[in-house]
Amino acid sequence: MKNIYKPRAAIIAEIKRLTADTKHFTLRFYNSRDRENFNFDFGQFILLSVFGFGEIPLGITSAPEQKKNFEITVRQAGTVTRGLFKLKLGDKIGIRGPFGRGIKINDLRFKNIALIAGGIGLAPLRSIIQYVSWHRKDFGRTSLIYGARNKYELLYADEYKTWEKSIDIYPTVDEDIGNWTGQVGVVTDICDKESLKCEEAAAIVCGPPVMYKFVVEKLLALGFASQDIYLLLERQMKCGVGKCQHCVCDGKYVCQDGPVFTYEEAKEIKGLI
Image (cartoon, rainbow, N blue to C red; front, side, top):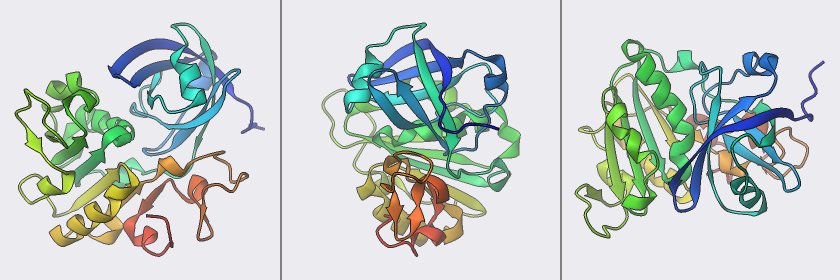
């Protein structure tokens, strides 16, 4: 019987700095059976242990079919992330999960897809971008609208040229601090029928809490159906198994009933967004 409380050992296979406070880690399970059995849906999350520091929930940033390794993106924000940032290639960490309810790939197949992210919220959407890029004929038009504070805070900037072969990318920044030729403003400024194909479409949103209300209002106005707007709420995760009660919202356990909710579901849960 699988023990959901026991971490599985993994090593750090690659580390890449993305911004001043954000790193991207490629991880590999020690045990080949653990690698083969690590299956997940888009939007599910893991619990990562840094031994001697603690455990944190993190979204997965690589596509599910990438079996040899899997990837995470981490912004330094507390004790555990400080411990993680001290580790080097080959160091060991622990992995539990995946946990929660994600998005099934068949719910997106052959649809137009709108990906809308703010800040570190792009991290879990990267797995969808990878999958669409590898299976382009299975999807309609896919657009990414992504906002960050400034050009130095844009995640995965060196991957955009590759992504542009498969999806349309619309980056925007809150402030132009020099040598920026793109859009300046919030993501809702460029959510329109030129950047998004709204018919037979699904929208997936992930970002800071303040973003959800305004993005959802814009998507509904553009014609997206409530049941086709997916909200990733992984920021509310704690233990992952419904024991600590920290993620309970109006009787729902975000770690088990989510972290992905359709807006049709979310609008009935008080305080969720």
